[in-house]
Length: 240
Image (cartoon, rainbow, N blue to C red; front, side, top):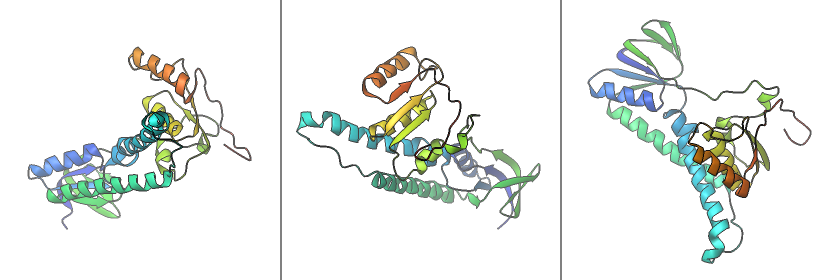
């Protein structure tokens, strides 16, 4: 395999894949570097698995709340492990679709992390590759607050790594990700508490949205704790 390309893309997320495919469609020789799974945050630990979890939570909660009106009685026998398993099958199918499209456009996929060795060369898995142009499309990662014991908790990536539900959970954050994940956990039957620093969640959204959300949470949950700044996370014999 030739180790010189017209274009190397570092990062196999939505932006990186789109850029690599488009360049290849224009006849350029392209390589894409990705160390884990194609699709980036959205497909693997973001909007796609979140929507699967949200739909599962919505169905469960809908049956429990509205079921009696339609002749459906009793509690839902919910198997979290099955939901996670089917979610991963769906994501794997998306991985395959991305790889098929890259192969179709003759994009070379390099597995590993890229390290620049000069302006136009990178090292991937011990091999040196060069290109006329190199795009850095590595995306981002969750920010961990500077709180004592923060390492005892987890982030949104850890949420999607769960294989069983906790009995009780504290979610810290007022943004849409914290709101969504706390709502999902609450619908799954977890005793969920959302802690926010200011007086309302989603404060950068339209006020009617945040105000309506507060009313819904006050009535139906999860438990909302306003003006609550975490000082430390401590581990006890029973819980974190």
